[in-house]
Every structure is written in structure tokens, then in C-alpha cells.
Image (cartoon, rainbow, N blue to C red):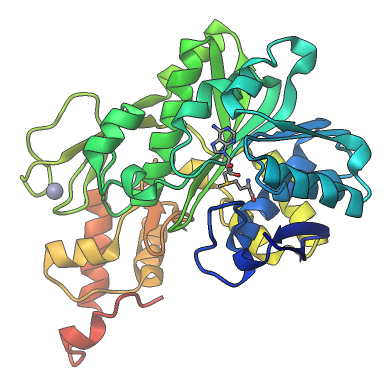
Length: 395
Ligand SMILES: C[S@@+](CC[C@H](N)C(=O)[O-])C[C@H]1O[C@@H](n2cnc3c(N)ncnc32)[C@H](O)[C@@H]1O
Ligand SMILES: [Zn+2]
């Protein structure tokens, strides 16, 4: 296998040549995905913002994330890279030398859970543990939580997005013990299914979580959570999980522990979602500092993604879709900005959702949102034919 040097962020990586030319990159004999650089950029700036000195890249491949943290986060003193693929680790070890960080890196050709569960002594735990498997991270959740120091951060990537975002709710039920749903806020639902599973698996071993950031793309869902050790912290996190009733017909959504037989707005049957994480997903101080770190490092997309989270926890754990509302109302679709303006004038808070391509987060009930969509549609010039005004998105 031919390895070539590849610069990402400020770090020199050694990666399979084919991984830079094939899309998707080959998984064997060694995997590296250049398209996941944003995912790693965000890890670097959150690690830089959070404090702590030790980082475990527990499924490191060629060490892209661990090496970047070692090279680009000055405060970090120790990075452990773990993978059962020793070819990948050899490339990581060589690249550590190229970046002058060999002294703070260690490499373990080991199975991830075996390695993480062996770090049970307090002084062997890490301030950060990252889990980045192919597919679901569900097997690694308790191992990662166990190896993270009290107050440290665990970050988890899931690439089974079709399961988490409701294309296969029965698989989500089996895998995450929660029903996902392919609704108008499917990525936020997926994030909350994953965070909810982390909270419940943590609670089983007396560990609570406080999510500090999350993001979702078509290819992966990612959650960062602070680990807080102790049974009462575990109980507190469990209290923040619960169910939603989500109406696929009109978009009405509510927190509801009991299954609801009929939607209060359209009368059809809403779908039960969950249990999901209903609590906050951001820690504003940490994110402000991560945003600064991203700007200083010139990581513009990471800065935009983190910036889009500002104020997200002031809203309920869902968003509403203009397309859904206008189709339920049988009116022409209207712009998010027009509906946003009407809601703001009515005294409601509004924000573009950071999780989906389109959609508004608002503290207004769905009925108010529908009303705003209807009012905005009535204000459209009558000469605009419906087909013309119904673009995929007018934003
Ligand atoms: C998606 S890749 C990780 C990519 C890497 N984090 C990056 O940013 O380039 C998943 C890696 O996990 C490793 N892996 C999968 N299951 C594992 C396990 N149970 N124990 C150890 N390594 C594992 C694979 O060999 C592979 O290198
Ligand atoms: Zn409805």
C-alpha cells in the first residue's frame, strides 16, 4: 500500500494514495476520508476551547484526529491513538515524527472497547475520548464514557444516519432503544436519539452527560458531551430524555410521554418518537471560545457551523417546515424570512435551524406558525401562480 503525505489543518498526515482519489475512499487495508476534515476541524477547536491535557483517539485509523490535536492544540500533553489495524497505526506513528509530536503520542494496536475499559483507574482516564467507527458507535458508548475523566468530554460520530434519521425506525428501536422518525427535523431527531442513547447507557453505569455541541450532515451525526460521574448526575440526565409526538401530516410537534391518538390540529395520528434527549445541546461559553479558536485558525466552515448553534437551546427540540405547513394549508409556499418576520412581530423568538437544510425553530406553538405561513401566503401577489412560488426553498 502506498502512503503519501497530505496536509490537513496545520498537520502532515500519511494517508493511502487511493484515499485522495477515490470517493468514497477504500476502507481496506487502511481507511482515511479527506472529506471528514470538517469533523476533525471541529474536534480540534472544541478540544482547544475545553481545557484538559489528554486526548484519546480511540478509533484513530492513520491518526488524523489525534495527530491534529497533538499538533494544533498547544495545551495538549498526551494523545493516545488506538486502532486494531496496525498498518494504520504505523502510518500514524511515522506522521507523529514528521510533525514533531512523537514525544506526546502513544500508539496501541488494540480493540477499542478492550483498551478503553482497561483505563478504569482515575489517573489513566482521558480529558477527551473520541469514538469514530464505521457505522454505529453504540458498542463503544459505555467504554468511552468509562475512560473519560469526570468533567471531560466524550465525542461520538455515527454514520448510520438512515437509521438515526428515521428511514429504518425498527432498526433504531433495536440499536438505540428509541424510535427515530423521518420527519421535517430528522437530523435533529437523529442527534437526539444518539444523545438519548448516550444518556441511558451512561445512567446504567452511574454516569451523567451534559451535551455541549452536536452537528449533523448527510453522512454523519456527531455529539459532544461532558461526562459527569455519579448516580445523581445520571438521574438528572435521564430526566432530560423523553418522547415527542410528531405529526407527519401537518407538522404539529409536542413533548408527550403518552402516545397521542389524534393530532390536535389536523386530527390524524401523530407518530411517537423516542425516548430522545430533550435537554440542551450547547454550552454557550465553550462554543464562543471554540468559535474564536476556529476564526483564529482560519477554519471558516467550522466557525460557521459552530456559530449557527448560537442560542439553539432557547428553542424547543424541533423545527417547523414551511413546505409542510403550506402543503397542509394548501397555500403557496413562502419564504422563511417572511414567516420569521411575522412571528417576531407577534412576540415569538425565531431562528433558522442549524440541523436541517430548511426549517425554523421558534418558541411559538405550531398553530401560530401555521397562522404565520397562511398570512404570509395571503400577502403574496395574486398574480404569482402557485407553481412558480413553490420553489424547493426561497431562501
Ligand atoms: C471511520 S475509521 C476512523 C477514521 C479516523 N478517526 C479519521 O478521522 O481518519 C474507523 C477506524 O476504526 C477502526 N476500528 C473499527 N472497529 C474497531 C475496534 N473494535 N477496535 C479497534 N479499532 C477499530 C478501523 O480499523 C478504522 O481505522
Ligand atoms: Zn397534524
